[in-house]
Image (cartoon, rainbow, N blue to C red; front, side, top):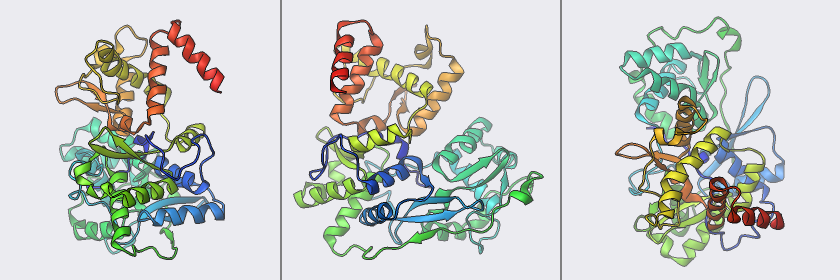
Length: 421
């Protein structure tokens, strides 16, 4: 299974680290760069040397490293990878395992690898271009649902940065280049089991002219990357677990955070990476973006939702949290809920079409903002647990304005926000 970044799901935070400054202040450039890379998977273009130096030092303290890719057109792409020997351990924190690709998306990714990387002795990235049509045919021949395959190929894998698509022509993406060497070693051992194209990897006519040269990531090394002490190792292990988990991790799985020294060091290290530690009630931990970083990402439209996705998310929250809370049957101050809403309810008496709402829900599920209930319907997803108290309050105010825009409370909210601005 290929681990997925929870970048787009990490939209908020709860408490500022102990050494953090005013939330309204401009974030540290190195921290903001790392946050941008987490939110979008990679960053295009050159970066100031001072910013790069700060980002590299902060990343190394969390077992990460930065690398550069240059495509044939000369564009520089920055990616994050793991330091040698560092990677998430899905068995170490069972209450919060790393986010992984769904089964069909894993199959599609394997088929893309089989087409792009025919020789296991060769450098895997970027490999050979492959045909989108051929990949679909290969996976459907293995009894995968065609619509699910198309969704994985057109949305899930490109969003994760594992592949790129240009019409019918595909190639491995920047996130594939950043996979740990241990992953590629494992893939080499099972290379003969990768799905093979039913069309023998036939490419569009333009493929010879657009084929990529063999490129590798130039990892930017800095000194003192290895953990020096057990204390340092505990910090890195904790951050690795928190940053790769799809949802909260129970405190029992992270007993080291009960140590005040480790707790403070984790908060400081996260702050330098553009992240912060969040307490989910009294039983779990998660991470998110500090308010200043989240605001900067939003200003630059990095990792933000599309307008239709925001509208559908608002409807989900109204029906699953706001209405039950108004009826006195939902008293939790987070956005967790046990009251699912059905698609028919979301589109009732609304101008939004079923197909549009369904597409938005798929995007929200991929980003972790919406989850599906076991009995059917939709619930708020784990990404909403990453909001700070201030951000949760702002979201509640938005729903008040949405539900009764001409009411007294809505007017007060708008007046207060105008005054604060």
